[in-house]
Length: 284
Length: 109
Length: 139
Image 1 (cartoon, each protein chain N blue to C red):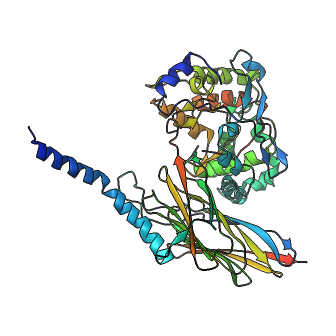
Image 2 (cartoon, rainbow over the protein chains, first blue to last red):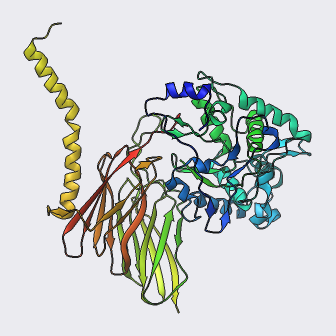
Image 3 (cartoon, chains in turn purple, green, yellow):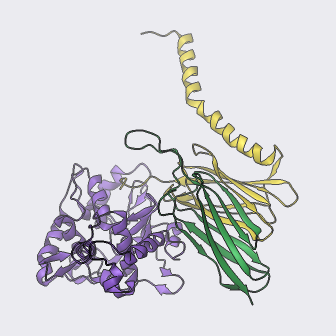
């Protein structure tokens, strides 16, 4: 268990249920009995100065029952939404009479995409997320309406695309033209927001493994997104989750799809460089 | 009819005569409990799947009466005896009268 | 405002009654469901198994498993839910085992109850307390 001043403060604040030793477990995530996932990895080079031993998937912080839901694709309710995403992939929409499949053929053409996004887009001159690319295709190539950024259809499509890279290591680029956006994301990560004056780091870097009330704080990794949450029984996007977290600090949050959240997504993704792409994962 | 209801079934394609096989089913459905309120404080009416059945060649494997305490996207796992080649028929009955079905063939060889 | 000792006692008793009223109401809903299933027959405590987590990470999706060898039916109740009914599994002649898994909603920490109608027509009951935790910051 990590211990520092913040932990002590948290201990005082959260003493009612008692601070249970809630360290992440050492289980191994093998999906469908065959795909072994990397759920613990050495710190990426850019995190050398961070007071952490290794990076860990949020899967390790969940109960055995919740973990089991991700170990078999049939038990994973997120797969319902992958099926829906596959229908969307093959559905012709918009003025150009095209579906995703018209240009990209089989969804397996998306293999490797989720692992390297968000990514600098030379043509657009900005860092783009998978969601932005999906909408870019819909608007400019299909002549269709964009999906709302953190909507159900968007999450479905992100889940279908993430699944094609499942098991591949997250490997987002943070140098070159992406660096400026990455730096901006890093600054947001360490900035305290809201009436509770909490930064991402206060919970997910300083206190992962500890309890916040009756819940178990993870490292806030996003390698498992989109993620099926038991809480709301649907797929949740990374930006939707960011929004929920910042709202809980009692702050005005940034919007899903905003420049701030795109930058934060790149930075948080880079903290998971080396973990397997897990989407669609299952969390509480 | 609830939107985007999609049954999923996991059943083996083949079995030996008399073998006991594990079946899993999952159906996308909100299972609105009738206990929740919308943003203006009105009770959202109950809308659930209230019954699930599995039959093999017309004979019952399991017949489940379901209440609002069954989670969103109802999941069942159970076991069935396969006496001969034939079809598993899975049926879900919605409060609104909709019926969702899936069939899986098993070959006994 | 002053209360006499008698008035205070009355108020206290009334308050206690208000607090405890929902309890018998709920207990009777559970009792009614059991009576409807068993016809008031006595229940043994062996022959039915109920597996549920000791602590559920989220009350929205709690995995449970029930089994009772040779049973024709197993009824599952959640004693602390607004309505106690969860599911009744009726096993047909082609059931490979009288066993089923599902995922259920629990409104809070409470007892989950499984009652089986066994092969000989008698009834058996199993009960397990499941603690439902409240999330971290509600996110």
